[in-house]
Length: 144
Image 1: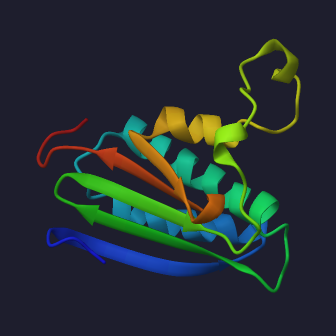
Image 2: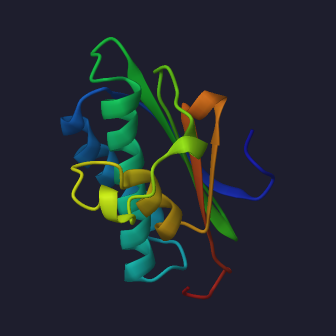
């Protein structure tokens, strides 16, 4: 349910194909562009959203063409919230390996959630790990 101070909200179902990500990111950046954030913060949001979408398609839905990812972007005067939900089996987000540990540095994957947590101000998981909600806070009229 949108908050009373919602400025804009979009919710879109994205097919479980990596090729669908750039089009949605372009739409998302159109929503983000008028927000009171600088270019660096906009880049962080875009990268975090991209990582969440890749994880949902690759690890959540396992590229199953019959499944989709639901992405919701909501802006208010003080924050941007992004939720990405897949239709997969979920995962234990508390049991993820630390990608900065020596034994994980050369692995080909395992950095997405770490990056999301570093790039966004608040990150939470729900629905058994099928939904990630990311928030970036800002004050109206002030670039972060």
